[in-house]
Image (cartoon, rainbow, N blue to C red):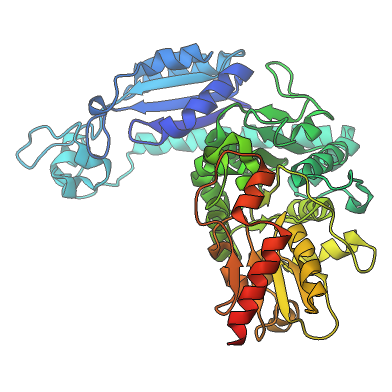
Length: 539
């Protein structure tokens, strides 16, 4: 059974959420090394499956291009025969549907049958209503020693273990012979499996002036496609919109019989795509990234949460990051999504680290640095929140925007400063930073001293020393935040005395410049809101 991958689903599992997309993709690509066992026992936690579905699973998978075999899942001989057939299959993935009996052999205290009971799905037999002792005896076991290993079973496993040890030794020997004969490839494989990057000079990446950050990300991806051989990128039917096509233009998509490219067209299957990227990250040897619109991160949350829980370095590329999606309407406009995903920066993983790195870059150069941080982050998933619309490049006091942007690794940094203590500190991430810069010009005309802060990652900023945090956002002065999401997104940075101008409603269908005007995301409104805030603050 060399080179075969096994997966397991059951009637009471989560197959409907993930297997739909995964089944379609596996069948379309002809992944013949995939064997999936379906424990079809007709039982769920609360009801039988007949209470919720009558679908023909076999026909569904056959329609996707799978080889489907249905067997008695409690018959070892039928299982062996099905596996033998699956191993021989070279064109299609295989689904083995095992019709099984939940709680097979279980009986009550009076000896009556206790099979096919929903209660056995989630409880021990004794608590579910069966007799543990009587069930063990019914299965030809000894209730006094229920976990005894029969001699014939022990001998079978001893022989199997011995045989597998010989096979493993033979494979290792073949691998060593291959490594000696293919030194360069062996070194590359070791590099990939170790998760190491080749030398990368991100500073050499050039962008068009005033680009949307999704476009800047596409430029970076095109550059990475030429530099990082084991980077695999997927997109949910949006590669030309989320700009992952910058990567695709340098390679080609996976198709049946040809996996020499490095791009997966996942189709409209965001959850499946995220789960597949998790699987690639768990396998190791490849770097997985996937893209879609930010509002569709809602579909991906279960897989994103698992990525954070397991510490998988998947790169989530989420574009169209605010109400400025405009003409696509409020259904496609993320408002609460940024606040939701940034909660992952508050949630710690089991190593005590922020469970996710969330970055919302303010211009094209900051997007380059965000990708640099994402590629170097090997401990957690990274979220890149990118704009649909163009953004003016931020100024640099040192005329070195790349060096300025490298301060993103502290979570927040000063983009433009003033002489002495600021009268007000303006804080934002993403496209709102450019709006603050224009608004600050109006405030400076009023004689105010203004500091502007770009905060791509609140999570990273909270990890900095109190001295650094206070040097960027003073804790004893007025702080005004601007966010295209819920105001709570920036409240942690603005503080209790700070003011945040954000969006408290769903968006509307209109061009983004009109929405900016209607929602108050203009330099003039920044000027007006800050003056009103300062007047109240002084009181």
